[in-house]
Image 1: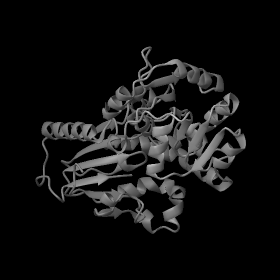
Image 2: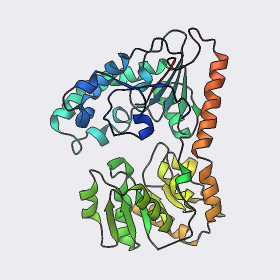
Image 3: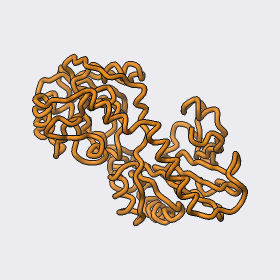
Image 4: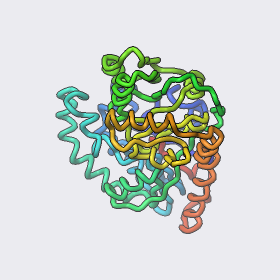
Length: 359
């Protein structure tokens, strides 16, 4: 929306997999697009991603915006162009979450052996390519610290946009707690399932993923699973729940903001992006943070939440500060300030002078 005439570059693109607004755009892909089974097994080609992103021809562009959680920041910047990286996280699967993705319980033998061989080269490239952007924007203070720790680079924080306008303020409360999101290991949904199975409070888990069967095996009858739900049903769950439970450590966390946009408080683990979006205050704030990823710590937070007083209107007002228009204004101001401070060469910015790398 900020750059409607920008050319988009992606390692690969499966038609119909992104929003209609993006589907209408010009999307240039890399050689990964042509590799066997790339549409469904692209993760197996991770060691090739650095080479793939380096093949993009960005000559003639004055502004490069890389939207990066993997290799996009490593795109080569032509002389005189400005490169701003919006960084969701340094590549988590080659740093702190390697075992969560490639441990014995998560990957086959051949995949593990291949990644062991590729790990050091990938880490070297990841750090070296951090010198290609002129500026980093982190999605949270949590990620700003990781960028400094891993890359040794400074960054500014602009929180990602949350489509808060899709959600309505609600005062309904049907007495259940809600977990929403992908059922993958790092989200620690098993903690919520074990805690609520013990307490007997109703818990609804909305989402799908490789952990689903294991989680069902841990659950007592008071814990139910919906599987994947469409947006309208998820919104209804937000509106009817007592509170959202957010037990994992995430880089930012869109789901807590969506719940707060419906006027619902959040129970969240006190690490990662949740510490920046959930206000745990004596007067109520927007939720309760629990200090340890343990059943006792989570259930203690449930007790605190039950006696706390929350104001739905304040919850929604706080959520709106993370809205799309807020993001657009801050991002535009940031980029324009860096463009003004940097003399650019080449043609004036126009339809063919802007590139954006969305992977």
